[in-house]
Image (cartoon, rainbow, N blue to C red):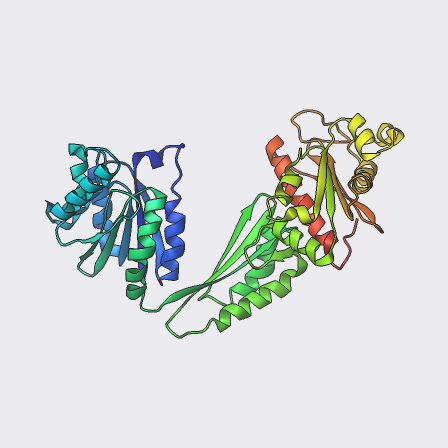
Length: 415
């Protein structure tokens, strides 16, 4: 069962606005049994929208249009849809009176221009808008269904949940989408695919997608199931991939890495403190994004200068002079020091050269040292990240969180 989404609005074709409605709608349509095959953004041009709709009517069973239902001259969704369907537009007196009452309740007199929002396409079912003024419409044309919804996400979501979703589920006929996800860190995308491609190729009915982001990779498995069908092959594939990748997988539940770290700290009853140089607080910020993180996060120190590294974290000055700020020795000393100062079980430290200046042949831009310490261990890791200043800092933050996760696991992290 195929669906497509059309977002209307010239503002969505600029760098200033992002179409977030399509993400929400895709998830909901999948739940209803529809595979979204196409998403389009069209500006406020009636001819463009009309042509796009004519093509959509030939290829999709359900079309969801977002936006262009307001009262202004550039709100063209009603007229373009009517033209594509060869239908008339009529003024609905009941909707018009309802609009007038809404404006009166707010102490305003409705402007003449707002009457356009009471115009409906011939044969349409009205979709009530409980949180806005623009009603939506539900239409059927030769076995193809169209949902016209307003653009503001708050209005669109309320209307879709209550009025479009039940209709979509009925049309979907019990077909459903099952998904399994893995998030992992520590392997490049190319190696991940090399290792799992021989596995997922045995399951052509399952869509396997590998998504790379800064410092993290996600694997998504999706299987469309007929009514009553069980996802046995999906479970089998997920199990084989999980076994192949091992502990580089940090979650199969769409959790953020910092959520996994929080759970590990809670389960072990341990606490953590961080000392950050080149990452400038982003590690502590990530850890504390998790609600209740104050139970295990004791605090952080931003120690860019050598003086603060010594005064706040107890790093010996002779160590800084001998090995330099960006070194294995200083990273370990920072981890030990911040742990003691904050009275935490674990200390995590980062020191590096984010650039664009400050590098040398021996210590290039992108070089970062990570230190971890607890009551029994003190280890370090050296990495060189490529990219501009922001990229180096982001990659260092993600690596530090991944390094910490493995440190907190029962098996020890190698230095």
